[in-house]
Image 1 (cartoon, helix red, strand yellow):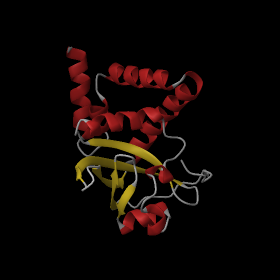
Image 2: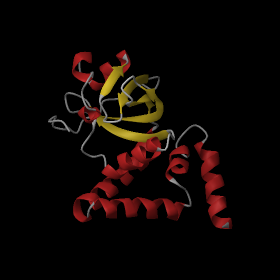
Image 3: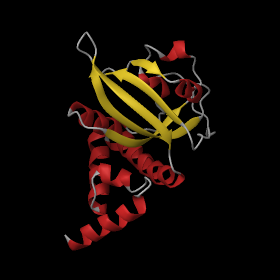
Length: 185
């Protein structure tokens, strides 16, 4: 991780933002778009060859990254809402879509990540969920945090991908579908 001290000020992400990065399986950043450089507050030279943890906010529970790596290791796309930290300690929320891009000449897997504005209702819900997951993680351990997430999703009758989808553009329709599916099962 990094040594940036979080401050309780949000960096407001432009609703039109789209930025990209690529990284290897160790989380080492290979490329960063100009928009991501601006969002992070770092200079490009500070980002390239740095570990992606440079922007990881300490409020993020480990189980979300575990889930992300499980999906990526199966060559599946990961979509989620992430709270990051910029160079001066402000937090910002983004929707992240990550997929396996290809391997480089050394055989390392490379991942392409597209980041965009996270809807406010997603920030509110995922902020609450992540707070609960992090509390479980700190008080009872990683396994209990993961069990909490599993129970949280099971109660709602969805998996993680489906829960995330309810906060995207077609989310209202999906929420109704998932609720009906749960009631009928």
